[in-house]
Length: 80
Image (cartoon, rainbow, N blue to C red; front, side, top):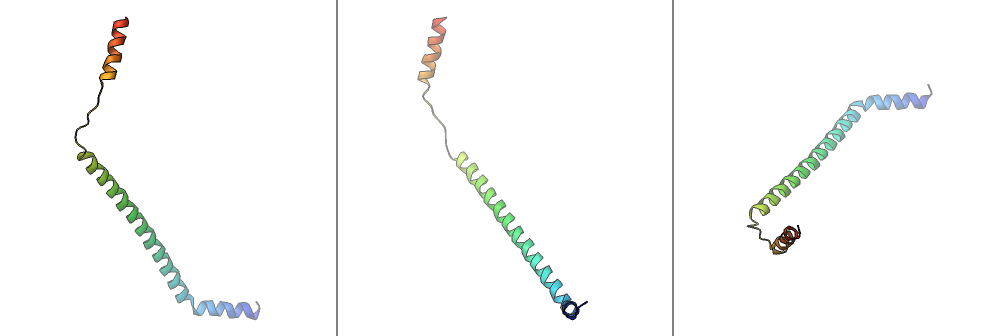
């Protein structure tokens, strides 16, 4: 091994605990961020579903003018 490799290995060995702690911290931050995004998405979907349900409940009765349809069905019955 060259002296550079030996020095680099010794430096890594000296800082091994700090390097591992940094990796663990970065992994924890990534997991927490992903969990936060998933929770926000779930909350948004839940809110949207409840809002849609409430709008449907408060819409009231629906009326339709079906006289044209009745006229058409009557005309079909008279042709036979």
